[in-house]
Length: 241
Image 1 (cartoon, helix red, strand yellow):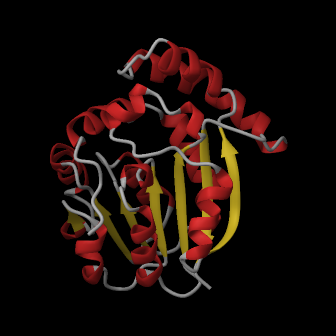
Image 2: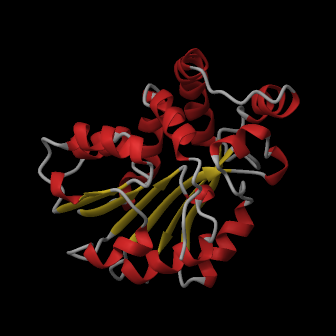
């Protein structure tokens, strides 16, 4: 059975810091927006940062949040308790929960999650079988195997992805890739220096704030017109036809 990395406590603290990356999440929403439907499942919802953005932007018929980390699940419950779909927040893993997803979802969202899943092929198969026809899977993952650093291991990452590799896995599981792009080309150099060369294993709030306020708005403007050949992350949307 597919299981995400058990290093959930550190993963949880990392997500708490990323809560402050407002521009980062707004950019992701802009990239995914046209593919998000009315029946959504967010896997690895963390403390609910992206969930809150979705609630503000969309009128939903159903929303499920799945979070395997126990400490983040508690924060997620507190944050989404007052929401309409508060009884659809699960602490667990998709292969154990997919039969509870009623109505059948038209959108799955995986932001910095698939790299934590040991058997990502099995996970993609479960997603495909759970989705409505013409539904979408929105994925955001760390990219480029040669960027894999001690920090990745600390976070519980099994891998970083190359574009063709993930596209191939999606195709093998029945999906049609309709959007695929490297993301955050500027982030490669600081990642190499900070996490690969100096082997830093902690993501600080100051680092996140600075990068989010200075680099992300610049990158968003540049990458709107110039598709980077490589990037620190990979963004893909796949469809079940």
